[in-house]
Figure 1 (cartoon, rainbow, N blue to C red):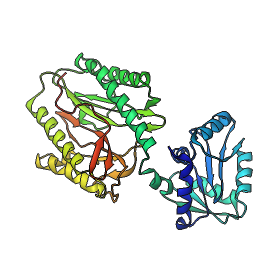
Figure 2: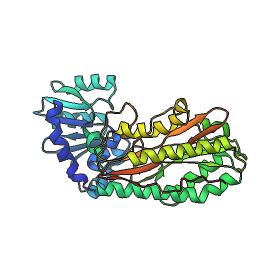
Figure 3: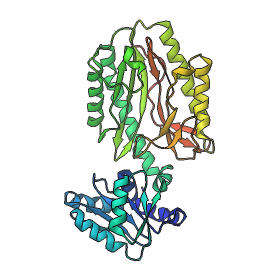
Figure 4: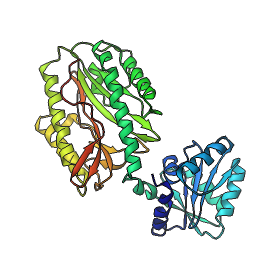
Length: 360
C-alpha cells in the first residue's frame, strides 16, 4: 500500500475545507495516513510535515509501524502535557486548524480552542474518509484475504448448525476458526440467530439450540492487517416450511438484483432500489427494515452508504456490501450478504461461500 502518498493527497483538500493544517483524531484515519494502529494517538498534518503524538505505551510500536508503512514523520511520545506543548509548538505560524467534527466531542473542541489559542479551530467533515472510499491494490488484497478466511471458517463450522449446537457455540467456533486461520480478530460481534431470533436483524447469540425447521442467520467477518470483511448466509435445518423456503428464494433473488446493479458511475441508491423492488413485489416491503449495504475497509461500516436516501456515487475500487433481508415475527428472518469490489463494468465478489439453499 502507498501509505506514504496519502498525506499529500489530503493536503490538497485542506484549503477547500478552510484550514491550513488538520488534527486527525479518528483512529482509523490516523492508521490510514501513517500506519500507526495504537489505541491512543493524534496525527497533525501540516503543509510540509507530519507529527504523530502518543503516550509511552506505544513508543516502540509507533516507530516500527511508521517504518513499515514507509512514512516519515516527527514523533512525540509523552504524557498529555508534553503532547500539548509539542502540538502548540508545531502549530507556530498556523492560523486555522481543522478538527474532525465527527470524532471530536463538543467538550474537547472547546478545550482545544482554549489551549491552542490564538489558533482558530474549524470543523471539517469527511476529508480523510473521502480518500478512503476507493481502495488501492494493497487494501483490496487485505480485504480479499479477510473474506477468504471467513469463508473457510464458515465451511469448517457449518456442521455445528446441523448438529443442533447453540447459537453461542457456533459463534464462538467461528471466531476461534478465523483467528486460527490468520485473522487478527472478528470484524464485529458475530451474529448467529436461529428460529424466532432470526427475525431480529442484529440478534446476539444465545444459549438457544438450533432446532429442526429453523432459519439460521449467520453474520460475521474477519480482520486482516486492519481491514475487514463482512458476510451473511442463512441456512435451514431439515423440515423447513414452504413459507420459509420462499423467504430464502426471494432474498436470494433480491441480493442477486442488487449485485447486478453495482457499477462505477451509478448512484448507490439504485442498488438499494434494485434489491427493494424484488422484496416489494413479493409483498414484504415492510419486512425489509434496513439499508441494503455499506462500505467496508478499516471500519466495518464506512462510506459509501448503499441505502434509499444515499447521495453517494459508486466508484471503481469502492468496496461495499449488498445485504437485503426479510424479517417476519413468527417465521424468522433471512439475510444474504456479500462483500464486493465495484468495477467499471460491474463488481467482483470477495466473499464466495455458496448462496444457494443449504439444508443442514
